[in-house]
Length: 264
Figure 1 (cartoon, one colour):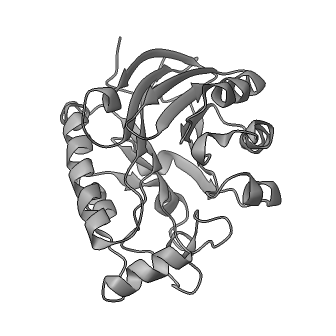
Figure 2 (cartoon, rainbow, N blue to C red):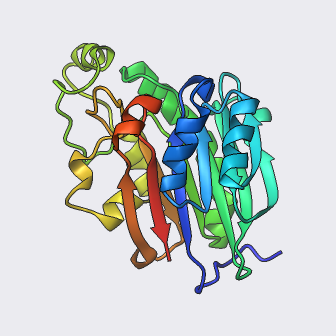
């Protein structure tokens, strides 16, 4: 198995989607939204209901793996072969969910994918806990960084980018209360530390002008971007496109909008 490089002739469309508390009763609209993204690989966060994951995977004609965390579950779905997986959430105290999958593209190249769910809420104490979770995550993936193995981290980081322009009038009430309690600030350290570790925010790579004002959360109060797909060891020129899907169905299927990236 060669994990050191990605076949230059391959491309991948990846979607990451927090489907909210398992998605029970919403499997079909969730699948319809994902299907419209023409994804090769899908990361599902809060994939807490196995029947929902199975129904979505069946509709998309994908295989799936799940990684149970302490509170929630992450899942990776793929139309390509998944040759290896590790549920780090089962052996580490934090973060809540961290599922690693190695996916083999039809051309023979392999993609290492980490499905991530970090602690929610915007108080300084919550950011401090996310920093502790991030330290564990970075430690787990350190071997990939040291070996120069290209990989991706996708999911709900519940974290704000240092470049994001947040209008507190547009965020949900609990976030405004946290902003007030924090001295009228929203912490940004977690994403900053990911960037300092060499990870690239794919939305920024593809659309640097739009990224600072783009929002993935909440669907009813879209004032923040807390969902990301980061890449490491992949030439940013290969990030062909990145997006947040905000169509009408997505507004009601979950409290997060799905995000995507195409890497060529």
